[in-house]
Length: 165
Image (cartoon, rainbow, N blue to C red; front, side, top):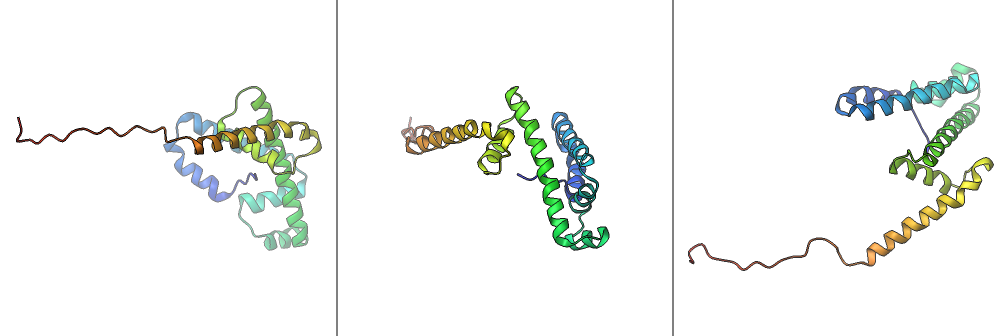
């Protein structure tokens, strides 16, 4: 899971904000504010690179030219910046998860993070827990495939002609 705040996404969000309910708008606003705050905590070069790439839409070669670095250095710094932001967002989700305040979609993000295999050492203790949840979800899905369709049963109704009394 990589959290990317692009200029196009921010524009789209601002254009569609009238169609969301107030709670969704507030949550989206909070997420954007948290990401901006996290960007401000990055080292200066990483801040510049992630803003230029993910917010302003510059290409890697343009960023390298502007910052006076190699394209590979831009790529590495961008990757590190995204990982730091992503890790912090996962840590926040974990806190909310253990407080019982996450949605099903957020829990899916957490499970995907732990299934990715790129779990930092300080979070590795949680990996078996979320692996277990994934196994249970798979078992439930397999069990449902084997069950007969639980939809409404067809009922035969005798046809009655309109001319018949």
